[in-house]
Image (cartoon, rainbow, N blue to C red):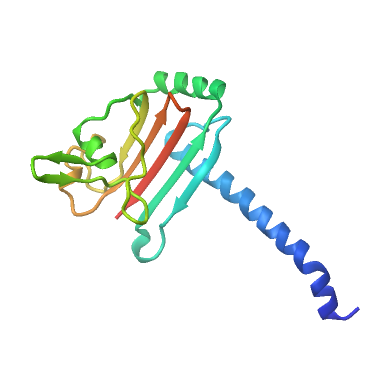
Length: 175
């Protein structure tokens, strides 16, 4: 058999194996990234959406991961978040509302900043659940993000668990 024949014979199985390994590593990597920041591994979650626009100049971009949980795993996760010191019950304060959904004050609109590639808001309205917020800005003097909206750049992580839908939303922004 010639080298070209051997290449044709094995190329499809090799490509299929490479794609399968890539998909496997990517989904495990997403959960591991979220777990490292959040302080726990969300058991029973299935990644249903993922996008990462980091790269290019200075690593700016966003990472957005959505994980679905079954009813039992969702209840277990909600109990874990309720007992956590770093997760807070919804609703958001003014600043986080502006980040996640936008805030209109008179004629002025602030945000939303949790947006996709086209600038559309990524998060649905969530009434019952918990959130995690980490202001990663190098000069942040508190984790509250109180001065976040007045900065020229933003570096934060926001995660929200929707207890009604058993869904975890994880978002990082680096500008």
